[in-house]
Image 1: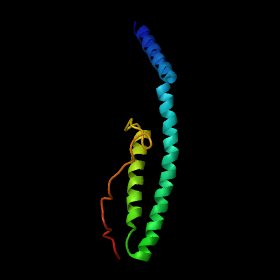
Image 2: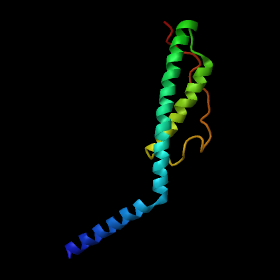
Image 3: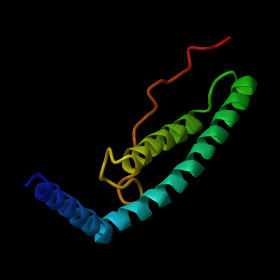
Image 4: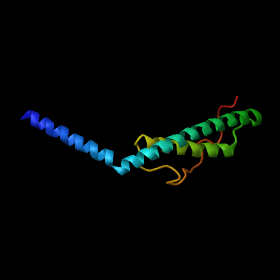
Length: 114
């Protein structure tokens, strides 16, 4: 009796796996995840470039560039949305499928002046 129940559970599990493998929505999600992982990688590199430019700008001008602060803030928020999507913490696809994350940087000026 116990063996029949286990066979029934295995058969049910096998059917569920088969159904999941045939699910178009799961495969489409996988494609979007791969796409956004690539875009997130590029975005991360862009964030590092902006950080480098901000360092140089800080040495030259004595303060960060406000336009780059807004850009980096948007990139950071976008990257957060990408990570949320590819880790299944959100089902909402990031930009361009939703609005670009807006808002202003949390800090007007850096307090780390030396």
